[in-house]
Length: 305
Image (cartoon, rainbow, N blue to C red; front, side, top):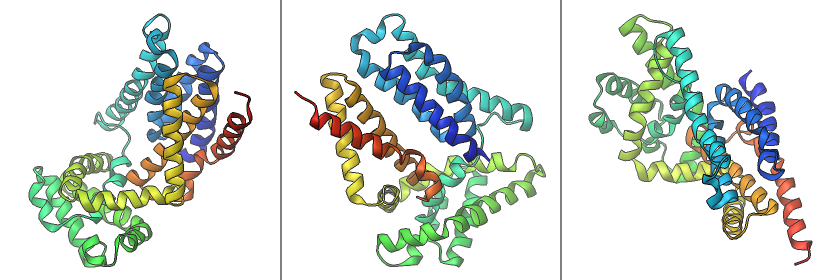
């Protein structure tokens, strides 16, 4: 249901953002604020659009960004993520007694760190709950052969197993066992998912730090698959670099559009590789930008100097 709401919110937000950045319709800051809050409360990963708008607005206005009313718009874009965080956490404080954002983000993101983890990583986890949940999860994954160290083969083969078995590693193992652990310990059915999210958030950076080489190798492969190959990844990166230096030199609608769209495409690929796996329902949000980018590049090539 949330994905069905997120896509129209996303398209509407992009429309208002284009109006604000490229059509001088500054009053659209109200529309942007409302839709961005609704979108971020529906699918939290889209909150990054707010600081992206702030970044582009700085490039557009340069030194004038600190003058009224430009500075107001900059502060607005930088503040919106905190507004969303407070609204989301306040709801869960009222409904569930914990001041925490909606769960399932870190529960998904911890899956790859668990896949590359080692048994001795338990010693690095200071919280007893985190340590016991990790031991339970790692033991199960080891028995199923769903650890990078047990799969064998090169990194591509390891990632393919991770890709295919993601639901088992995440939903059927870590999420189920962590929620069951808290249910038995606290006997509170309405808070187990939130506590599981907290545990995932605490253990994830430790597992990444302990296994950073394997983690980033597989993370890179996930990013490549999110863009359907290394060549598209290189092209998007080069497009982003070219448009960035172009906008630093002088802000134009064409350069701004290329920078905005290329950052959206690349950031979505990175987010998908970080928090989940590259499947179509996570990737299609920015597909239509390919047509827009091709049109803008054609205009730039064919336009008179």
